[in-house]
Length: 496
Image 1: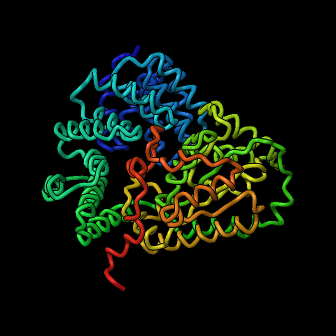
Image 2 (image 1 turned 90 degrees about the horizontal axis):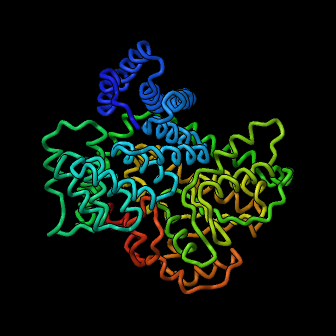
Image 3 (image 1 turned 180 degrees about the vertical axis):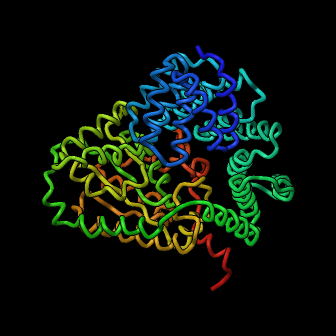
């Protein structure tokens, strides 16, 4: 059951939808002065705290919202969202399950679908998105969210239909344009270039929407091999992002090099390792490097199940490492317990594809000595173009400037080589994207031998897997292996 919001809360919700954080906070504070038990006002303050990068304040506000309004699904959903972003995935799932029992409005069903999607429960997300669209078939946001879930599940035609419907009702819907552009390879006779270009020509978009539309236009231009135009649109979008965000590239690089300097083989040998027999598989690397391809190949094996990009190990490590004497057995137990609670894998081996785990390989080995770590590498120039043109929507902050991107790529290569030297040979391997593309069977056998698994022909048919994918490569991995991404960067510089 959800009570209608007061006029002040409704005004706060409208302000937040427009991105006006300051007005949202003013309305919420006025509401709380009048009614301190307003769960909706506290929930909105949790949202604005996250926008302002104040996660602890967001957590306090979210818990207060749910405690004050336990029967308001939107308040409980906010708590689930903040818990997830705070790295407390078990608690996030518990809140989402609580919200599912009371979510009856299309708004709450749509919001809850997003949470279940983040938690890797894509079938549940689909069910809730379909309910929201059935109740409000003309709401663009609900149509878009349904399309995004369908993309993850491989229902690409349905996703395009729902993107078309969302855009028909909101022609300037930038994210829907980008999602639609990515769902298939555009052709000279079937594309949306004029439509997107006309929206940009008219102007009036905020900078985020303009950047999103430029990424969409670049994707379609590249499909049509209009490479100069594609590069110009990507560069324009990246400049918008870089000029509107706070990012200390030197500090991030320093953190990576600090790992290399401090977590050497002697340090690792000194750690009190746990005795867990579990042997999870970690596939990690930079985005757009081929991690999803490796994941899909391995998860096509009958003994391997992917749990996706969980972000669980880093969250559990941050809690355990706060202690004066870190307990790595406790870290291993906490990680495995969280994986079991949230994802409940049923096969013999599970695979975690959290990209940033390349920063934690030493800790992974200490907590789970039998774990297998696969680090993915890719040609520097192809990697740079794939990262630069990707619409990460504010994530991977190093990718919006070519110099910063190059420096980060070098740091990643160095940390990968560091782990190869520092960890036992049986614990870590480096796999090159180009080698997979050039010899799928050979590299497949190499991977399975490293993992101690018998050969299965099914890994050669990875693209036929119906398993969901929430990554930027969710469309590409539905196709047979192709070589057109190797050397693609040359189209943007001409012959050397």
